[in-house]
Amino acid sequence: MKKSVKSIAVLVSICAVVSVILALTNAITAPIITQNEEMAANAALLEVLPDGGSFERADTTAYTLPATVSDVYLASSGGHVVRLTTTGYASGMVLMCGINPDGTVAGTKLIASSETPSIGGAAAESFASLLPGRSLADIDGVDTVSGATKTTAAYRSAVRDALNTVVILGGGSVDLRTDEEILADALNEALGAANGAFTKHFFTEVTEGVDAIYFADNGAGAVCVIGEQFIALDASYTVITACDNTVADTAKTAVDTVRASAVTALDLAAYEGLPTHLVKAEKTATGNYVMEIKAAGYGITGGNEYHPASGEYIHILVSLTADGRIIDCMTLSQAETDGIGSACADEAFYGQFDGKTEETYNSIDAISGATLTTDGYKKAILRAFECVRIFEGGDPS
Image: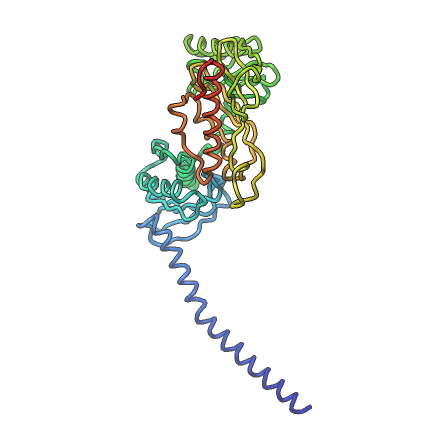
């Protein structure tokens, strides 16, 4: 019994000595570790703001900053470094942006990304070299990179958010509305009688000079978007926005044209050689075609790299002239990988097909990281061109 007590006492003594040694070691090494971590963090900040000196994290709790901003660091030089998280073709795109004391970009660095390395990743790296020296006044003048439009547009938008952040911290005022909120506000301001509820028109007729038409869900009228102008028409479709006669006539003609458009369903059984992916087709009184067609994207042909294939097609609505030019295009439904192939449902992607022909449709920017989705979508568009030739009595090939 005495031996057991003695053994326990010895063990306790050893543990106590070890604890003291560990405590002393931690007391010595902890400051060194902290210092090394601070030096590493400081080095990363200096990479985007070389003349920054030392840095401290800013307390931003009293400010309303862009949603992309996660951290702001104040530099002893008077500059700032902003850490942002945004979404290109995939979520989780993280970058650091250094801002000089004069409000210009010192440098940027992509520190985390799910973009395809050979496409979006490489494009972001080359795009970053175009940004130093840019300010809020000219940041939007930096062109996106062809083939990676969405990635580089997101990068540019994040840098704009960093520049805006510095303005806000300096006591300035910045419009932080999203593009969707700006559009909604512009439509509501143009036609308040719509009570904010609009449906964007899908064009089946060629309308010159008009970018988009939004019809009020309650029948209160419509709004035509012509460049940066929002031209409202009341319930009788009379222009009520003050504008010059040419703009008013353009808006009126466009709305009258789309309202007068009529379609007739085509009997697909009456035509030979139509692709099995064609769901339905209609023809307008003016000779244009409107088709719903299926695309075999990742959801059909993919494996298990991201998740099991869904077994669902992408459904596309596309309108074309009889001579094979796309009038409008949109994704009706899709079940592609969320955050990757699902970008085929964004107008930034499918809107690229507007105005394209069989000779030019293949030049659109691909969805980064979603080759199967992009290729399947483009094959469906090619089938739409083939259908037009068949409907017009020609050889589908």
